[in-house]
Image 1 (cartoon, rainbow, N blue to C red):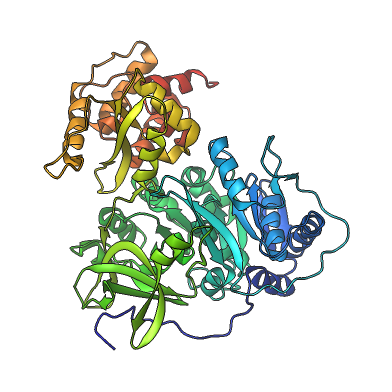
Image 2 (cartoon, rainbow, N blue to C red):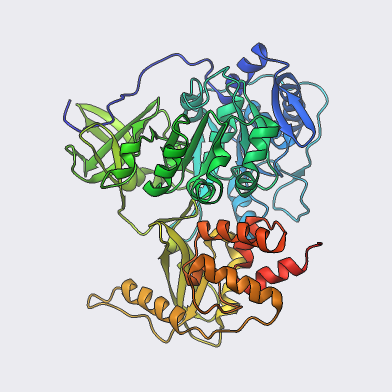
Length: 590
């Protein structure tokens, strides 16, 4: 085999416990019918009860015409009923598209229209472009359907460079190949995991299906990953949590604010962004007996493609923490065009195997461009070109070296700046617009800044409000600046380096709006302490002063100490200013 051709763990052929996700779940029901599958507040649902609930929902969906080939939008809070609905959709041979009610309604309507399903499953008030089914158990039993591993199981929407979100269609085989026999939470091991990741993100599978398809227990959290960060000690102590997966930013937040909260866990997983060696080193020093898994994989390869258990020596590698080895049913390659790269040579990370998505819904051209056939070892191989740069280390590990294009990760979300720019340019009064990512101290991108040239009187505040009505929160730039003209280079391309310098000058020249109340003055002191900012404006975002997700975590701890009030991290993220957080504090009961 050519040196560095692919991951040193080639895809094995093996017989799975079942071919489909609901088949793996049924395998668990037959063996552990009375084991607790879900815990939500004071409710406990065992495997047999969850199976029966999903059968009832499947009968109701069948009566409404849901069957093979359909993509069913689901907009529900994180409850046992939500999990049962997802299983019911799968049992009907259909695929689910879990959407987020916090997203702007026009975007949700566009997504539903694209999917053209017989129903949308939700209890939220419409109007919606599809008939609404509010979950209720049906009468009778829906006849079992023949579903194969190649059939679609889920649809995930990601930011698209064309200005329209991309719908990635994943198949059962992609999830089955991971969780049929998952080292992270082995089948029958008694894994108890908080379920906190949003179901609209494919990584949802890591803290949901990865446990439910192996006989473990899920603790459903209402507020998601930020609640997990705040309650981790309690979940381990009182709820018996022994396994956890958190996005990179949240993992690093917990390391910074409460490193001992991980004590008592069997295993910890993280992923979504480049892992900071400094935070990884702090974890492995404090918790040498808890394996820390660093996982990587785009949605086009279904949930995860590679995994690496972090060792102390990894924290001193010149290119950071490795991405590791390919997971079962997956092959990883580093290519220069179609040519395999040698060890140490940087090329594009390409993925193959059972995890590859079916493609992009209603976009055959993009599917053909990103999912290609390349002859490797004289065998035509279907690959997904990730756009990520990587190399093989001398000890056979995959290393990450950044991106080929403009795509960035903001707090774990995949962001295409082109989509935001196109959306901004559709707003009346915007002539041209450019998005520039703003970096944090740990090397990851923390915020987005939008510069625009106006052809009218459109204010910065009005443009940001228009974007908030059209885009999900993670795509709305934290900073919007109106400028007379965009700086360009000699080749007439936008000079993004100059725009970053303009951003820095805006921050440096910002007028200091002095704190007005005792609460604001105390908060300004906390901002100074946490951010190192000598002059704090009551109206300036902490992110313009160099803050990041770790700063938010530290801010929450200091606010709790100073005021005796615990404010959710999510609210601090949204408020972000002295004045905004003071408003939160003054609205709480002592």
